[in-house]
Length: 203
Image (tube, rainbow, N blue to C red; front, side, top):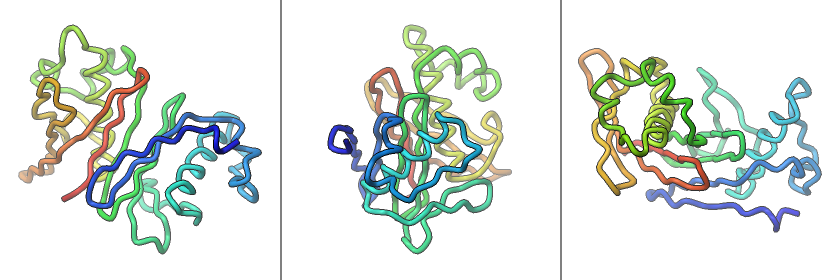
């Protein structure tokens, strides 16, 4: 069954990689899942997410159980690597990196556009394309979600600022604002199957 699952691997440079695949309820009976027990309180969909993440970690060569540090940040004990985890309704993604990182996958919809006032300033909204507004607002939300996973700053509107969105680039900058300190990060992204995937790593 595992051979039928298509896992995409994104080489992010500097020994960082993203592993991504569709959620699959059949993972519960896959060989890699032997002995794995999702928390019993999880819904069926949440258990599928949980198992898909473990499948991706196994594909990356990591079989130890994920632990969670402050603010729910995932940790791979004893690996010396940083990880970030994300899932949409249809996909799960895991990023493994030697430096702090963040990854996010989102289905493109009008959801982000409807709540844009909660996480984007006026100038940030103007960066979105009128033709591809749903895509761009989803992309901006995803970028800030990825940065949150590095910084832990919960205020997407005041703490994070989209700097630009160059046409045809697949890369743009976002700033983390903390008091008088401003740190700029580079966001990488790809569009696939009606989804956006964004990732950031330090350095």
